[in-house]
Amino acid sequence: MTLKAWRYYVPLLGLIIIISFCWRGLSLHPQALPSVLIDQPAANFTLPNLLEPKQWVDQRVLHGSWTLLNVWASWCQTCTEEQAFLLTLKQRYPQLQIIGVDFQDNPVAARAWLKRYGNPYHLVLADLSGKVGVDYGVYGTPENFLIDEQGIIRAKVTGVLNEQHWATMAILLT
Image (cartoon, rainbow, N blue to C red; front, side):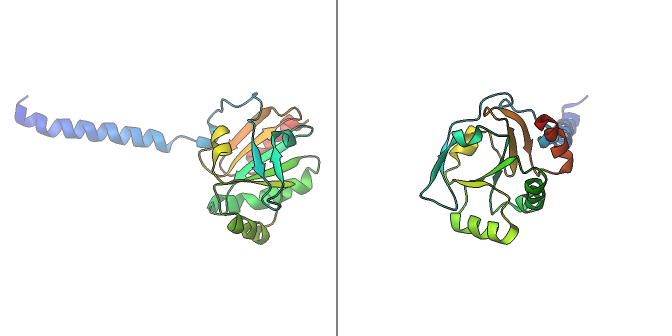
């Protein structure tokens, strides 16, 4: 093969490699990614209550009953999809404590969002800096963590929580 012919094959080979990486990336399911936090104690935190900012809450609120920790934000489009399902969960599982963590959001916008779409939470915490989200490995909203009575993370769902995801998590409640 001549040097002139290689000028055409090298870029073509590069293009094939790039396309294969993109194709592989599109076939991944981020909801299915395992979390290193499973079977680990929930991370420590101290956050203000979004609805009563003078009240501060720490991770001990996660102890004593099963808790669904939902990380959300008013700027998150998919969180709006998930909200109706969370309202259903609150009715269906009254023993389940649902705690919302408003992630890197404007508190005024977050309170307005809850008023508009409904509040399924027993408690809503404000993670203004996003530090708690980082401690929990959050890389987007919504994300959900199912935490047992001892404060141990038992399951995680990245993306919208729905019936299908909940079916696999609810098994742990029994």
